[in-house]
Image (cartoon, rainbow, N blue to C red; front, side):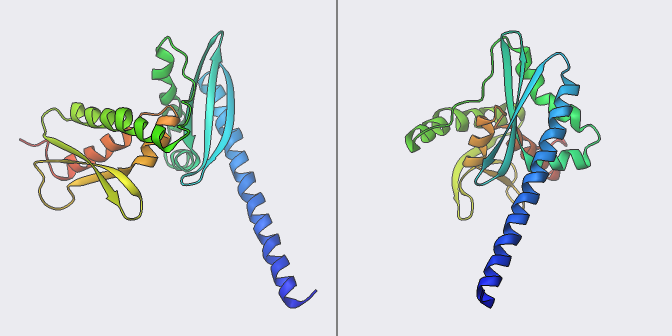
Length: 210
């Protein structure tokens, strides 16, 4: 083998080792969260699956089954790792996403992803964006809120929101439409991160003070 071939082979071996290591980390976390789910919901049968989003990385989805009823919800691995490394009540945080879904009488399968650009546009324009806009306005009834679509050069189309009363400084928050759609497809509330970001703006600008 030439020196160049040896270098190439070494790089390939290193890449394979790294991939195996990452796969092992993902599987270890998956097994751990699966056990947490079983402990949080002992009366349910728990099924889990691993997926990967090209933008947001590895994702886990879990389904709780009991009799004829089932409820599914998904998570990004990075948010799971962050919470389980910093939040002493991470198990409760995880289970909280299922509690509201379990209260309703319907089954909650993960939504089918849109198959075409037109379907994706319709889902965003007719459901996700209007829902997020109304949810944010309902959360802050004492404030005038503006919500608009913008184009971010790095993240593409984003949903931007802000308080009309705040003119200067950090006065808006924005989330990529792709991220909001991914949350929706995981049976998560796409308005939640937007509302959390708005609360930070609310506090930073002392809007709650008379």
